Length: 436
Image (cartoon, rainbow, N blue to C red):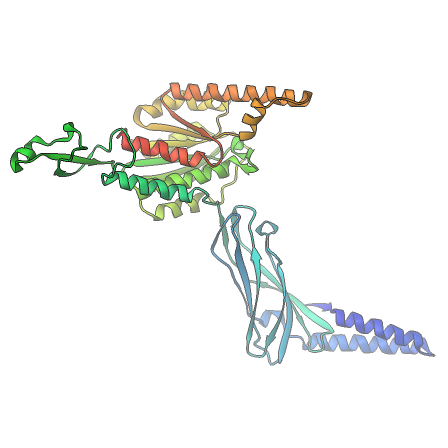
C-alpha cells in the first residue's frame, strides 16, 4: 500500500520548523523534531485501515441518453473497529461523462455506511466501463494515509437521444385512428387487407359494397380494410466516412440514428417487422426483423456504440448481406450521405436489382448552412467563393436525388429535425397505399 502524507502532517512540519528556528540549539532540536514527526507518521500509517478490506460499491444507471442527466453514487462500509473512518476516493470516470466530480471525501462511522454522489451529463455516445476506484484511508491521527486500488467494475451505456419520440407517438396515434375508420385526413387508399363487414354509411364508397352480404341481410353492407400488417422494413445504416461530417454540430450518423429510432418505433408498433443492418467497410451489426415495443430497444442497443469510421463504405457488400439474410419482399431504407461519386458508382448500379423485388427509400441529412450560404448575398470575396461552392454542392445533390428517383427509389432529403418525421410519413404513405 502506498504511504501518502496528509495536509495535517504538512501543517505539523510547518509549526515544527518555527520551533526549530526559535530554539537556541537548532541542530539537535531539528533532528529531534524531524524524527518525532517521522515516527508519528509511520505509526499513523501502520494503524490506518488497509484499502483492500473496505467494501466499496458503485451505483449507476444502466442506460443514460446523450445529453441527459443522471447520478453516480459510491457507498462505503466501515468493517473496522475505528470509531470514524476517514477516506478519499477517486473514480475512473471518463471526461466525456461530464461528471461534476470524480472524487469524494467520506467519513464512515464504525459498523455503518456512507454514500457520496456526483451528477453526470454525458457528451458522447458509447459504452463506458469504469473499473478501478482509488482509496486513500487516513490513519487515526490523520498524519498519513494508505492508498490502494480496488476493482469495482461497472457498465454504463450512453444511448443516442430520441429527439423525435413525440413525433413518433403522434404518427402512431394518427395511423391507429385512421385504421379504425375515423377519417381525420383525406388520403388515398386505406389499406388493402380485409378487416370486417359493417353497415353502409353515407361517407362510404360504392365500390366497397359487398353485394353478396347485402343480399343476405337485406340492407347495404360494405367491406372495410386496414393497412397490411406483418410487413418487413429493413433499415440499412451507413457508418462510413461521409457520415462523420457534422451538421448542426452533430455527426450525420447521429441524425440518422434518430430517424432509425423513430421509424422503428412507428413501424413495429403498427404491426410490421423492423430490422437493422449497420455497415461501413464491413457489416457491424444485424438485428433480425421483429415487431412489438421491445424491438426499439434491440435496435438502439445494436447501434448506440457505433462511431463513423473514416473508410469508404461497401454498399455492395451491405446489400448482398442484406438480401442474403432477408429474401422476403421488404421496404429497404438506406441511411447515407448523398455524395454524388459514391451514389453513382456503388448505389445506382445495384438499385435496379433492389427495386425489382423491394421498395427502396434513400434517407439523407441536408445541411441547412449550405442552403443559407447558397442563397445569401456575399458581403466580401471569401463569402463569394463560399457561395459558389455551396451552389455547386446543392446542384450536385439535386442531380444525385434526380438520378435515384429516376431509378425508382424514393428520396427523403431533409434538414435535421425534419428527416425523421418526413421519413415516417413516407413509410405511412407506402403502408396506406398497399405498395408492399
